[in-house]
Length: 393
Image (cartoon, rainbow, N blue to C red):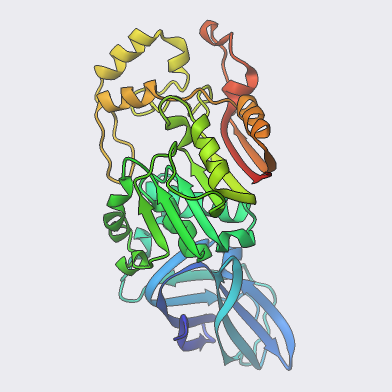
């Protein structure tokens, strides 16, 4: 069965708008791009992609859709108009469907008028495109993990490595949203997410709430287990890729043993990706449900900080429906590992990990107060660290 079928096309010379109706038969397709070409006698007049109009269609579920575009260029007489619809398959753009029709420009000949005006809709409003995560952006928890995190891992930090089609392990997978995003994009031989707190049990409800079909969880290659990162129940050299997004800082008592376990189960020359929380940076205290000051934990003594946390009702932030008490937040804070960029780099190199790609995101401004004087520029200003490394052993 074809993943995309073009059902009909239409050209309206009066408003220079071309329309195309298409259907998606697959449960979900990723990184959709739609291209329209105008030509005459084999000579291309224009070609334009919906992505060029800032439409980042990260994914579309099974359903019916209509795309239309007002073309800025048309020539007198008849031209050939062709639609091409692409999606990502295993890290590569694949042409899924195409269709051609005649565009009659009449007796007019127009020059460049304006940029093409693209529109995309679901004719029956099922699904409502405005309800899909990629239309919401970074304020949405599901977008930050299913779209943003998965893309950062697959495309930016691991550069669509062939190893992503092998066996993948995520240590500290949480609710499993990122795992699902990576799994569906890469279609690996196996993907296992482990987390002792079993937040992944909420995943069926989360995908229903975000308009993904339930069948995406039916694939036996995607598995979740309640393993502890310090005691991974896998043989040596079991995985081609190991991931850790926002988990190492939360391992009570330190993360060294977890890194040893990751190194053990990761094949020689396998890839390790990690995105650890940085304790001294502007996102490091994990208490932003309580405070606006990102360095409050470095300015107050421990007892005063505890009193303020426990006496304040946490402000709800979008965590995909997870509500926690002030006591839980305080416990998680006390368990945080004080990770810094320089210290983490030394640890990884000392264990035999060879850095491949690294990305740092910095805070715009650090205003030093008396309490912050003991801390380094780099530690306070570095908001996020992304790292991929080879396991040399």
